[in-house]
Length: 141
Image (cartoon, rainbow, N blue to C red; front, side):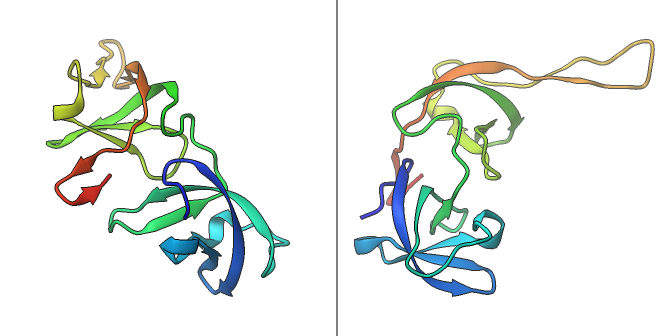
């Protein structure tokens, strides 16, 4: 079984046009998109990969290592805020969602408008967080 939110040593079982499939054991085959596949990758290779879920609740593998894995602390920046919560940069293409109901103090972005020029630089809050996996309804996030 692949461990969600952690680095896992998984074996390449199939190469396809859009990436490779890794043996997730009881989780079945896990896709690793082409952009993360090492150039010399072949069937039978064991790769160290981070496992997360995509927006459609599918397990996805990447060779990128996030700034924090499950159970670890990190100082992360708020990238955006929506009606569901704050999205943090944790070093992966998919941002880390922190729903409002899981926030001890409300996370937000500060935008400072420059009075001298038309530039509007973003000032992002950096927060120390611990990454966790929690159950929302029947879906693990």
